[in-house]
Image (cartoon, rainbow, N blue to C red; front, side, top):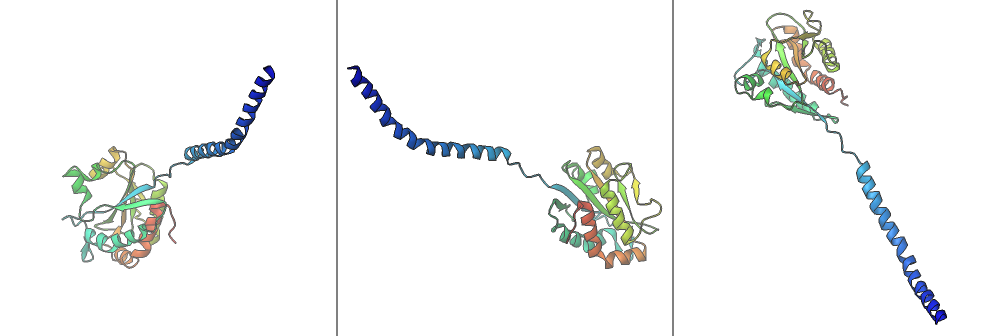
Length: 229
C-alpha cells in the first residue's frame, strides 16, 4: 500500500512538471515586458514646454504714436516690421513667439478696458517695439529692472549695429513712469521695451526702412537667443 501510494505521488509530480516547465518561460517574458513598459513610462520625461515671447507693436487702434518722415509710429511698425518679425519668428525652434493683435493698442486695452497686460500669462516675456521722438538719434532698451538682462544686452547690440545707441541712455533706461509697463512690473512679468531709433531722424528712418529684414531677423535672434540659418 505504501509503495503504491508513493508511486502515485511520484506519477502526479511527473505529470505536473512538464506543464510547469512549459508555461514558465512565457510567463517570465510577459512579466519582463510588463515590468519594462512600466519602467519606460517612469523614465520617460515630459518634454519641456517652450518659453513664450509676446511681441507687441506700439500704439495703433487710433493712437498713431510719434510722427516723422511722412508717416507715424503705428503705421511704420505694422507695415514694415510686423511682417518681417513674423517671418523670422516662424523659424524659431526652441521657443514660442506670438504676436499681440496688431489692430489693438496694448496700452489702451490695459488702462481703459482692464485687459491687455492684465490678461497676459505671467510666464510670458513681453517685447514691445516703438520709435522715438521728437529729436535725437539712435535707440535704446527700456528695462524692467535696474540692470539689463542678457536679452536686453543682446537687443542693445542690435540697436548699436543698426542705428547706433542713444547717447542719452548709453543703451538702457530703467523707467517706472510708464503705466502699462508698471502693470507688467507689478504682475512680475518679464518685459523689455525697444526704442528702435528716431522716426524724426532721416538717417535712422532710412536705415530702419531699407534694412528691415536684416534688423528684424537680428531682433528675433536676440530675443530668443537662437540663431536662424
